[in-house]
Structures are given as structure tokens and as C-alpha cells.
Length: 321
Ligand code: SF4
Image (cartoon, rainbow, N blue to C red; front, top):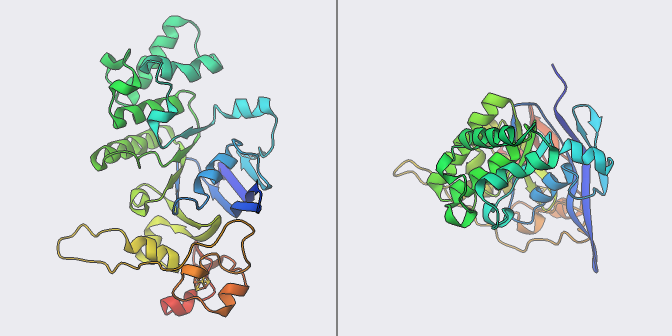
């Protein structure tokens, strides 16, 4: 078996605050193969976007390592980071605020090519921009349009084209469809899947919505307050959801079949603070199954079924296994 494209080992990212360190990402470990997608799911503030940025060295990490194609890239030099940006890209959630409103579609797509001088002359640059517009399904007539003249879906296609311009092997997709209408979401997800198949790109797909990654992720990791609660192959996670938090997330997804209903698990209790977090399970204040041990002892990840990892002291009792 070939080595993974990306290896993240015990990654931590804490932010200093006047009240103490905020544990945004706390000891996350995973691997990702070329051409595969890891869905990273959790509520806002769970650290999933920070994790993506820390992997790309956009945030300095507090501890842990990221390896890309067998190279340790955590804390590498600025020059190496710039080089790596060709291989590792990001697509942002809000295409409108991530695009300079004074630049046209063609200028926005040409920008990464300009920075890295990925063309031999002006004609070659224009040809590359035309090809990228075609690849992401932007009509040639939009060449000189400005972002405000486009709908959200087309703006996100610019974001995808910019990420693709340097032919990366890995893209962090940070909630790339959550600002879009449902029908447009499907178009962008299909486009990203097609590009993955053609080019073998690996995605880390960050989202608060489990259903978005159901059909596109190979593996899904569920995060809560900076820590990993559950990780498994996507199909397995949906057919055998083991962690009480994932069960609550899943219960919020409507079932498309008429007449079928899923009982919604409403989480009560306060979100605990990620600043100087208490020992024990971070989900304990909201977990219906919490006991004394949950408040005292941090639950380590355990492989309950092959490749299905869960961090919960009572996973067996909760699921009758
Ligand atoms: Fe709930 Fe305890 Fe499991 Fe945490 S460890 S999810 S509090 S049962």
C-alpha cells in the first residue's frame, strides 16, 4: 500500500486569550490518501476550520506534526510554504468576501498564475485562464465580469478555479457550499467530485452539515470543541453511528422519504468552554449519558469496529454492543 498523501499527528492549536489558552484544536491525528476525501464535521467553533488552516501553515501550530508526501511541513520556512501552496490549496466558505470586488473573473483566476509565474507569455496566461473557466463551468462571456455581477454558485466556481490554477494535490474545502442554495450546492459538489476523479485531488472537506459529506467523503471525522469524537468510513458512520454527539447531529438531518421520520435528539445543557477546558469528556455537559467518570476522565479514541474509532467511556452501553 502506498504512503498517505497527508499525515497529521497529534496536532494542537491553542490561541492565547486573557483568560488562558483556548484549545481550538486538541490532539488530532489522521491520514488522507491521494484522491480521497475526509469530511470533517462539527458545529461552529469546534475547531474544524482552524484545523484546516493549521495543516496549511496558515496558523502556526502549538504542537504536533503535519507530513505531506513524506515531508515534515510543520513550521517549515516561508519560502517552502510558498512552494507548498502550489500543492496544497484552500477553497473558502464565502466566495464573495474572499474575492477582490475590483478584479474581473479573468483577473481573479489569473492571480495565482501571476504569483507563481505559471505561464510563458500573455497568450499562454490567457489560454490557461480560458481552460480553467471551462473546467469549472464558467461561460467565456463572464471573462470580464465582476464578482458582484454573479450569483453565489458562479462566485464559488471562481474560488474553485483559483484553487485549481496551480494543479494542487490537496485542497482544504472550508464550508465551500454552505452559503449556497441547495440546488447550487449539488452543482458545486458534483463539480468537485468530477475534478477529484480527473485529477486525483485529495480533499479535506470541512462542514457543519453531515448530510453534505455523506456522498462525497471516504471517511468522516466528527469534532467537538477541538477534539475528535468519532471517525470512520462514511458508509459505516451513517449505518452504525456510535457516539452520542454524532447521533444527535445525525438526528437533525431530515429523511427524504415521505412518511418517515427520525426522532430528533435535542441537546440540552451548556457548551463547555474551550478555554482551559476541564478534564473529562468535553461533551459531558450536553450528553444524556454522562456519568461521574465522564466528568473526571478524558475518553481516549478506541477502535470499536474495524476503522471505526470512538471517544466515549460508555459507547458499548449506549449502543448495546
Ligand atoms: Fe457522553 Fe460520557 Fe460518552 Fe462523553 S464519554 S459522550 S459524556 S457518555
